[in-house]
Amino acid sequence: MSRLNNFSDKVIVMVLVFIFSTTNNLSGQDALKTDKKIDKELTKLLKDKSIKSAFEYIDSIEEETNKNLIKLTEIAAPPFLEEERAKALEKMFVDAGIDNVSIDEVGNVVALKKGTQGGKIIAIDAHLDTVFPEGTNVSVQQKGDTLFAPGIGDDTRGLAMLLTIFKAMKNSNIETKADIWFVATVGEEGLGDLRGVKHLFRDGAPKIDSWISIDGGAIGRVNNAGLGSVRYKALFTGKGGHSWGAFGLANPHHALGYAIKEFSVIAKKYTDEGPKTSFNIGRMGGGTSVNSIPFESWMEVDMRSVDKDRLIEIDGIFKASMQTALEEYNSSGIDDKIFLELIKIGDRPSGELSIDTPLVQRAISATTLFGSTPSLTRGSTNSNIPISLGIPAITIGRGGVGGGAHSLNEWWLNENGAEAIKLALLLTVSEAGY
Image (cartoon, rainbow, N blue to C red; front, side, top):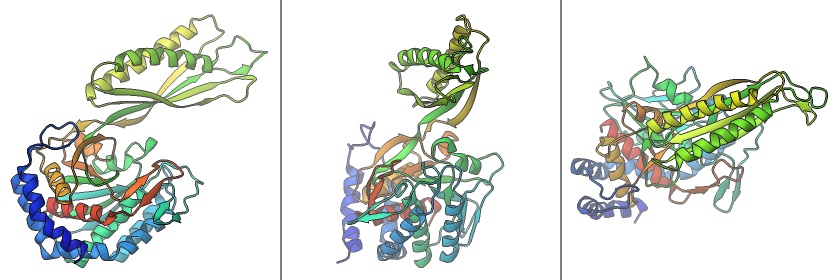
């Protein structure tokens, strides 16, 4: 008996357990309310011959999916330099027979599978970029069953999944009422500041009705809440000079030291209480030599909060601390003075969708049908943007087993990885109207 048939035989039992269960292990949830109509809808879909055919096809091309993962991983996609990978993925969709595919003004790949009715757009997304700078060795090494390479999981696996989902739908003649966009976005990581997804939800853009991101670990994640963040580069500048000959001249590094102490003390007191809020000084720089007074000194600061009002408040604390420190240093008896510029380098809005949102319900139901325990989570992903706008959006896992994300030793193991592809397909088809 095939793995698919084993899975199908268990569906009815699992649905009964799901519907009548009164407790669950969802993070932050004492009891999970489910929509019985959606449970029945997904159960019916799982019995559909075309859906079963698509699942079988996904199993049959696992080796091809793996080859696509390796091919895309070995095309570097550093921050703001995703173009080569985008072109390769665009060609893969063309070769697979997509209705239409293009690369937009900011570099997103948008592949369209037309619906029978149109009028609505359901987008399923993975991001093109990695955190690794230009010149990083992205060659894939295989040790046993495990693949090692920077970006092999986050989020190149998601890109390979998009292609397989489309091919499975096309091979099994699965049509949906709504149009489906298979989207590969730029700028999800770091200073990319979600620029790809922000462009897709800009004023005047085509209206996307639902958004599904693939970005994360194992099956079970249902990210329905966006963790908001705001980031700045604080730039302190002065004249600069010789460490001996110009001794006493205003020193940007010294001013930066004042600023770090002022902010960290006040911010620590603020974050010790209330809904979780964080702050971090992640990078610093400036100066030319040990015997030179620098002409500039800078730091990059990240602040996050589960609460949008507290994010605004710690933003205010940061700005006030910088100004206070600047004034204090400039009044300390130094020659000349230091200037300050605060440059916003990141702004990710927060938000949360109700568990009653149909897309969230579908994700919970589908996850349970696949034998996993769903967990409602909060994260900083592409979904932040639509969630903040009140548009149905979630982020789900890419399956398999992996680790070392954002490190040179990142790895991924295809342990039941096809199940995550099937789940994403089922969720997308259900949301788009089969």
